[in-house]
Length: 187
Image (cartoon, rainbow, N blue to C red; front, top):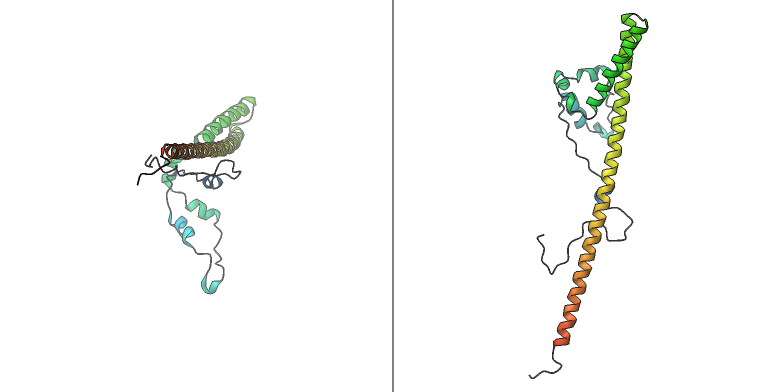
């Protein structure tokens, strides 16, 4: 793979028998792209320095509920399907809300009270399913990181074994050449 046969392969991970995982496993980088809108408020928060004039800490105001509502754009609702776990959460919430609302209505509650129960069931179902899905994703990421770690260790072991085999083969060839050299010199 771009290396000469004479040079041993370069190891990516730790040497065999090392107990410490490779660097990229210690600090896994998970790349996930969200196509959210960038608002001026968000870019201002990212560019504010932590120290103000004369080296004093900068007291940035905490964002309020009003700031949160103002940061929501109408375009955000068109991209909700791109948010991980959003579909599962909303579908579970819709099902829970419909089931509880109809159940309360058929049991004898008036329509507004049944609608209130349906809305609460929708919120609870959505949030619970969202959190469950997020927990499953975190567990999956941890398992993937473990698989990458194991694969990297196996590759490092194989490369080390290949390097050792190459070194032993080279030594055997050198011994064979020395054995074939004549013990005398004519000139």
